[in-house]
Image (cartoon, rainbow, N blue to C red):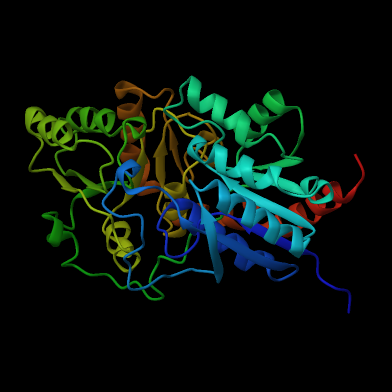
Length: 387
């Protein structure tokens, strides 16, 4: 039997709770079918004073999806970067795939990749869901170029990032996508008439869900404004807002009161552990992503995993991931009026569209992630070829 090619992936894993750790666990489990895979995790991700949330760690009792990892990388210790590079040099993997999601890690990734021997440095691929952060400034851009200096190639998780990388670096870019996250769904989800009542809603209501971390670029304020207008025509409409606020939550709660929609909106400012995710999606009819900017979104992948239609703004790759009138609707712009119109489209057509069936068809026909083994095989061949 031929020896499997070895891949070392560097990025956050369990016990960290961010979207990258979910994606990397999914990726590593998938790749182990055809490759020898090792996940090199962080032992210190963000220093506490820089982290906007309550905790960096997954407090879920049910981890849902994880992958064994070595906690080695310290994001702020240059001596540690040398140690990690030496470890990689000893292992001599066929490919080093480094997850990139924020310029803060630019010095760390530059330090590690600069310490690789000449042969191994040619085997570095960066996995990029988002190249420049949504709130990017000049320093962010400088740190991004600095951190990605030694990339031989890239794996972009959206078409927009693929284009950006090609223009910015002029290097080989492979493309895949986020997988559909269906592991949050209970094996048997039975109708529970009391579930909506827990949020103050009734079975006759149409419930919209905004889920995940709240930051300015996520556009929750736009959705609240659009929702208030929609209520004038749709009195049975309700909104469920669930996720930890990474900024002051007072303006949002004040906005709800000023708009007079407090009775129709249920808001929870907290991180939702894995074992509770199911109840929010099950209680909802449609998931809304009113983002001002994005590449793509793990929340959309979760919505499809639950068979729920989505309403999204046309930013980044979001619009390309929706089949209008079948898996959801796409607003014409990231503004209040357009978001309102697209939600109204959903409300007008929801009873006549078998969304769950269309989403299942989309999953079976259009999941780019299913070809991830092939993508990594091509990347290994590419980095093994001489420059």
